[in-house]
Length: 109
Image (tube, rainbow, N blue to C red; front, side, top):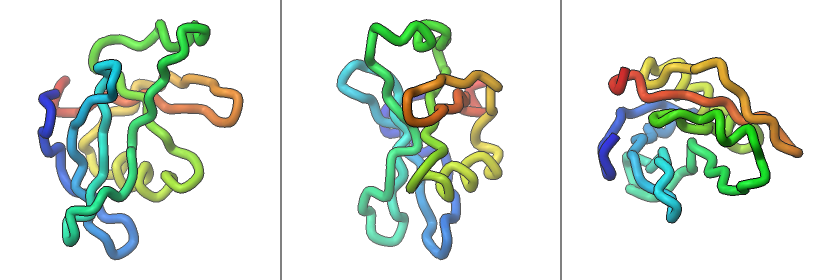
């Protein structure tokens, strides 16, 4: 995945959301959704886990992306999953407040 790479577009409600690769400050890949009509940020699809205390984070392999599928991200995650742009690895990261899914970009496999 390259920075600023457009992965594709998904529909959330009536909005078309363009999914673009960015980077978190620690270098982990970030998948950010932008409203295609306005260019405004819609939401982060990905979730950045940086706590060294969480052993589960060490199970991530290069190319793995933690996805926020809960709360305000439910509709975006459902559309992204259905789009075929991503592959669910089946891995899960248990957090105190939710469970993050681990996906990969389909084009990278």
